[in-house]
Length: 213
Length: 271
Image 1 (tube, one colour):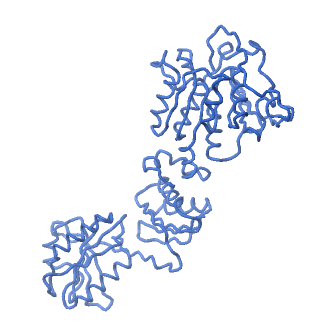
Image 2 (cartoon, one colour):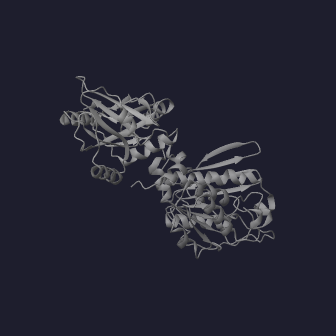
Image 3 (cartoon, chains in turn green, yellow):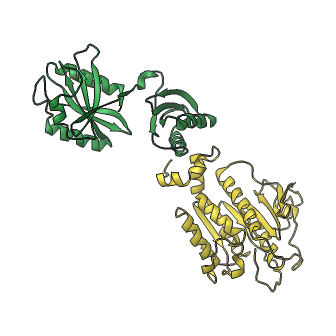
């Protein structure tokens, strides 16, 4: 699961505010990166289980639709237990597609873990935190996710996005590992654009910051 | 400014990948207007490549109907098209290869009375005609209207082509003052032509048109490219604008268009 650092920080903050109760909410993604969160009311007001307010839940889904986002996960906190799904969590996991994210507050650094739950079987998934603020001096003007787009169409889409920008503006392109992550920045730089940063986000993906020539 | 659909990005991806063309160049092509005079050996391959390239508006002029002897080289016309108007047959193939293109057909002879009005609607003209009087007519009209064009001719295994940017580069009359006397030069139908040679030359003309619309590279101006396909020798002859050119020189004597006499050729023409 790709998730922005901002969202991770926000859900930890939410979990802390709800102590001693469990906090809960939804996560939404666009282009494969979780970039939005929705804090929901735990109508159980309990320290060991949660129920999301259905009205707020529907409102969140509606809001996602309006913004072109997709439900990516459900998060809740464990104020006094480790970050792993309880029996109740597993029983109530109704959607095999979404991620179940748990924030545990028992450790000082607040561990966050994500799981897929399919027919009662729990699989932990890797959380890849995308930190746009790693390059604080660089302002990103546009983002294009070219994951899953093979060469040379990833370069075509990159060139289209660059054409929309003014000289000096910055495009972030997310590219598959391997040939795409090598060739696209290289080709763009041959056309005069500047590679400002290149960071591996996950085993499979890279972020490349290109400044338009 | 960017309004290409995903479908168009896929269709034109090999253009967009070129640094010299890119998204901007493809948009210039989609906004471009090219007139092809003659839907024959040169016009047919040019029409197919220009349509495939996404030139937004393509006009095609020809008064003839498809004959079976055309099919050996005029690749827009298929066996089923025999007796159809050449412009309709060519337009059908252009629209089939690329529905983005608006095709204007003109089933008529081009003459001194109608050519200027016709070419005025276009950015660039391709001369794909089969006779000298009409080649001079196209040159004269394009120079008078200030519209760039590509001259082209083929015979047997040979081809020649040059690009004219009026007012900037040598025109056809700078080097070839006037049409040869009627019947002095054989037309293709008298001399024969290797079919693929038409494709070689027509695609050079299409390339010049695409370069002009995308402002890419250097046009084949102030030079005449000739080739002999039998030995596959290519030669580029440098030309210069001539001050004494009867059309674009300092004291022009050709100031209006006239229909020169055509060769009284018994055979149906082919180009």
